[in-house]
Image (cartoon, rainbow, N blue to C red; front, top):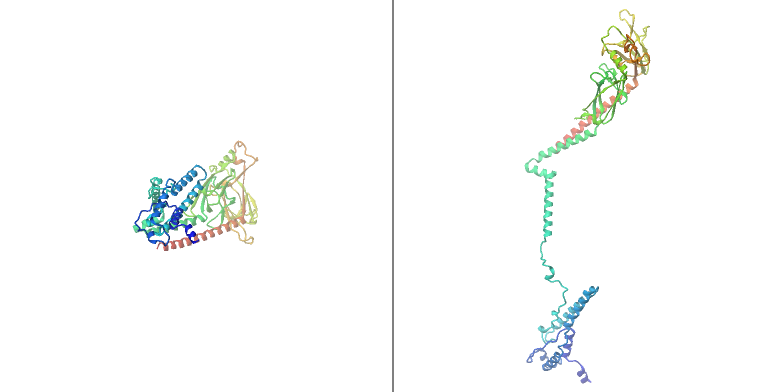
Length: 496
């Protein structure tokens, strides 16, 4: 039995040949030695046949050289699979197969290397006679230098251009910052030794800008001068009669004069309406807006002049007015009637600086209408009758003064002048004739009347509003001066 087992078991050479075949190692001819092989020295330990026997086996194996070797079969298989992948949609599967084969090849190569390391024990050729599996060509799946299209490592033209663009942009940005910002100005001033002066100038500029902003927030005030014709026409501002105070402390309503009518401390931002009217003329109205004012170097320095020239109601009114103003007729006098009303009633009337008396010598109070009046002679004490003239000397009309008694309350005193131009012609026939009758003038066809409506309550309210506005303006001025002084102090501190 033992002999049969020994006879049937493969020899050492057969085991080595089998391992070499499994790892894809081609058959190699073993050089003939004179017994110096390491395997020869082992003798019967591994039951290695003699060298003559190995030569016989090699010769026997070489008889089959016509068959393709395992390496050639593998290369052929790889070529077929790559061709198959190029023809159809199974390219990925072919690549996977190639990779699998490559991995299998690498595994076999590793095994072969391990076998090679056995040296003369299992490999008759020693370490230099190992497998030549490394020579297998796995195809053209790997890039070579010819596939790179002449590409060389280094900076491309695009990279260089982008770098230049970035440099130019950075330079331009730096130029803008230096040229058009405070940073550039500060740097330049620092090199010139003018940085302190620059800071002081900036502080002064900020102060002026702040003052300008404060002035813009404040209300603006101006003085309005209204001129035009006819003089002594009545003026209303924003629908109300305007008053002014005389040197004697009395208050008078404002009319057009040869030098104009002045209205002070008007709010520039507010729209104002100026209305002018006179007897025998068509009234006129003018609107004043902010953009029409001039000047304005300070919030209280605005100025505006408005000229209003009224047009007569008709040609007859124009002729009557001219005849009334004619001073060449000194022989013929004409007279008129005066009506005075006051609120409250009971105001004492002074006419041409004397108390207005009736024919009994009693003082008249409002309301009163008269075309005659009596004046007591200071020496004799007698009453003298007089009529109210229309044709008073130019610019020297009748003086009318009104004053409420103390029991009525605390009210201001009022004064006005009744000038020749201020009379109203009421036509005797109710309408002006085309031409006056023979030997007469349009002046002869008129009943001249003058009506005074004096509202002491309105005058009192007007004065109170005026005083309140004056006080407010003074307080705003004081506040503005204080803030300006404080700002100037801060600016000086910042400049230091």
